[in-house]
Amino acid sequence: AIQLTQSPSSLSASVGDRVTITCRASQGITSALAWYQQKPGKAPNLLIYDASSLQSGVPSRFSGSGSGTDFTLTISSLQPEDFATYFCQHFDSYPFTFGPGTKVDIK
Amino acid sequence: QVQLVESGGGVVQPGRSLRLSCAASGFIFSYYSMHWVRQAPGKGLEWVAVTSNDGTNKHYADSVKGRLTVSRDNSKNTLYLQMNSLRGDDTAVYYCARDSWVATTLGYMDVWGKGTTVIVSS
Image (cartoon, rainbow over all chains, first blue to last red; front, top):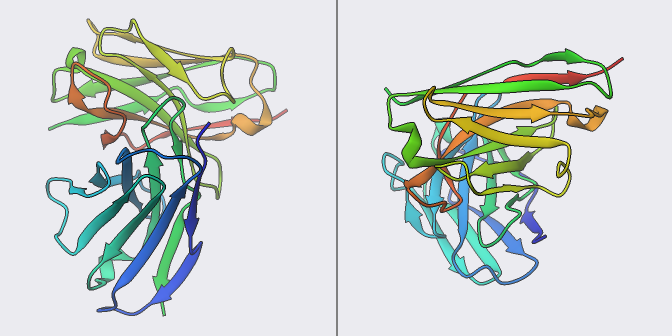
């Protein structure tokens, strides 16, 4: 199975900061990567698919990039509602897997 | 509105069985592949299984293969997860989620239920 790692595992940031989260796959997955946001006690919410496509209704401050094995999620200007945990997920081949998550909290 | 509602969770002894259900509404259920994803307490997300829109193709995580079975009844707009030989590490919130496109499995999920909790404990 393809393994995903994320870095950092957690970070502290302030409102207005630019935040970048990295996801690395154990083998090439072309652009078959999605990003989700999850708040405590809630279901995940799809942000990005196909590595860089913004899901409908998601603010444009979220963006994704990368292909092959290395991917990034960027929040251009962190807002109060963005404090959450972010997961990457590959869908290149079965079984699908998620990364371990990156928790973004308030500095 | 588009909605997924899971049910059937609870406390179950190790080795026993449980069946989860996911009722779909607000969209044409039979058009979409459907996934189960779980989250152990304080842990990350784990993809569990997917079924194609017609139920003919199914795939599983290695950790559940042979014990958990996904199925669907398109006449009832309902997805199921039959869980047999339950173990402590099956303790989790179980989410059902809709695949993002019709008639094929793309692999990412655009609609999620609120989840149902399964606790495996003696």
